[in-house]
Amino acid sequence: MRHLGGLLIGLVVTAAVLLGGGWAVQQAVGNAEVPPPDSLRMWIALGAMAAIGLVVGLVMAGRISPLATFVPSLVLLAWTVVYALDTNRALSFIPAEPSVNQILRDAGFGVRILLTTGVLALLGVALFIPVLMPSRWSRRDDELDEDYESTPEGSYY
Image (tube, rainbow, N blue to C red; front, top):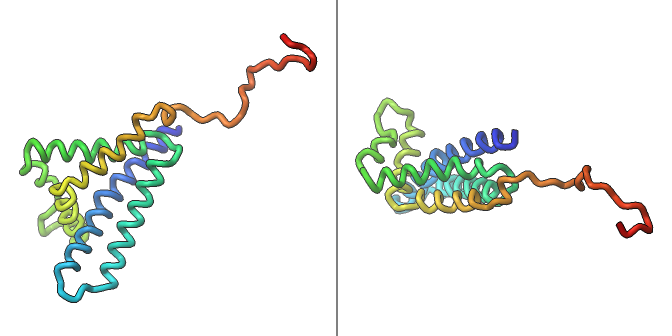
């Protein structure tokens, strides 16, 4: 059950990094190009980046299933490998058609920036490191082992 929850959390983290991070980067880059930056939109974008960073940090440091970090790392690293092998194919996965909602197109523009600059590869490697820790795969037992037989007081054996 712990790994099923980790899988679901991993899907949420993947969506947060790709959609939320892409949207926040697009907003920050778009506001930086305008001479007087719109401070409210910039603060919202920075707040979204901070929230996504907090979620990623909690998932990486938390004692939940390693699938919570493995799923997003697999997606980010696989997309980066596809980008390295075939740039046009990797960029074709990003929604850019006019029929797509404007928010998704904005997120796609931000994801394009994150992909082409290598930030998705960096995040993918950082999210993969907790998967390699053997302690993350075992369940933590807070209770003493119930099968342990205690020796009577005063006895050495």
